[in-house]
Amino acid sequence: MSRRQRREEARRIRWRRARALLASGLVLGVGTAVTLAAWNDAEYGAATFAAGRFGIVGATDGTTFSEHGSVGAAATLSFQAPPTAMAPGQTTYALYSVKTTNPSVAGTVQLVAGAPTGGLAGVLRYGVRAIGGIVCNATTYAAGTTVVPDGSALTTNGSGSLPLPADGASAVNYCFAITLPSGADNSAQGQTMSQTWQFSAVSG
Image 1 (cartoon, rainbow, N blue to C red):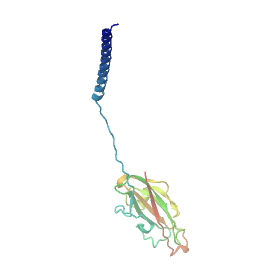
Image 2: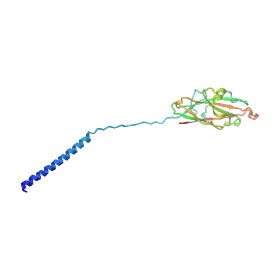
Image 3: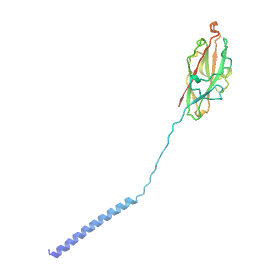
Image 4: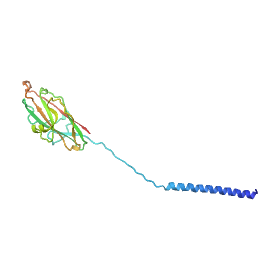
């Protein structure tokens, strides 16, 4: 092969290589253009959380509710007949209403008896019923739902829990009936008794 022919062959080889590189660059360029032009979108979700509150208040008249959160701050139940001069066979009645505060989540409440003190502690008997209104007397008591059976010792707790709607929507009305049994002997005369009940509430 002559020198001229060799030079021509070398030019053809360089041209083929140049075209190959150019073609490769065009393909890469097209691919890059597609990537840069791709459409995109996104969605996001978020939330904020806060804990609720739970609390209860009580009333001896069914209407004036406030907090009585300790034994020392216990509300004094208003019994119909004076509970300081009871006679054998006498029963006296008193209301205590409980509801949730506003705001508050819903819950349940259970009556828990404390430890009574005084000479009448072993003599007096009691019962408790849940009533539909705020009038607590012999008639409404008889129509109520038993919480503590009649004739129970003063240390008897309420059976089960009662529902408390959220935000103070409605109250649980407890009607207490305290009885000095007709068979109480003379040793009961002049004796006294003090008792505190707890209304134990839980949320849920």
